[in-house]
Length: 232
Image 1 (cartoon, rainbow, N blue to C red):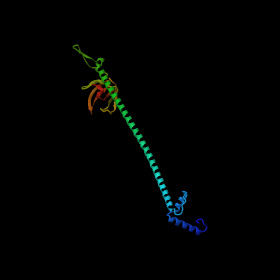
Image 2: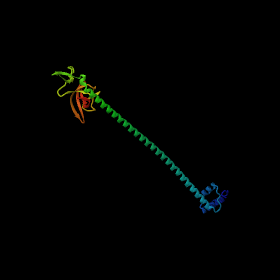
Image 3: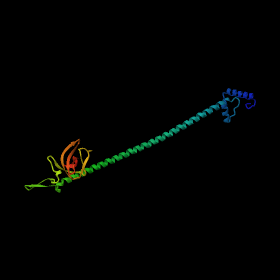
């Protein structure tokens, strides 16, 4: 009757159908879903329709729960990947720290070897300086009662710069390329460099902080050197 060409009959059939569905608390959507699932509702089967709607609702909820579970699993995988990246970064940081400690240990070892070599070189210079009188740096000045008196070699007449003044005395450079600074300071400008074994005139000494400085004079000019660099 719903397909009748008479408008009155079609409308009456539609109202009758809606009243019937309302009596069973159903809608056209429920009927369509039941038809889609292949069900054949019979008179008085409203309970089965309601049960089918509930099943469909449960399936939707189950589908939503499954989607939420998939999202949680995806977030968990991303979190695991981030944890792995953090572990890799931590391992790399530990490796870098270990390498830095090894390099620092090697630097300390090299510094210790350098200090040892410097101490050995200083000792050798001191031993050589102790033998200088026998090498001719000191010569006889006068003979009195058959006893030879030794004193530092006097400068040549042309070497006016190296003449001693009252309170001055000679010294010998102990290290190679000893810097002569303009002021008694490790950061002061350098006037010249002196060779090991070179003779200088020590004019005065001064203590600056924990270090003793010598004001010396040589053919290269005057300046300040650390006390440890000159035998005096």
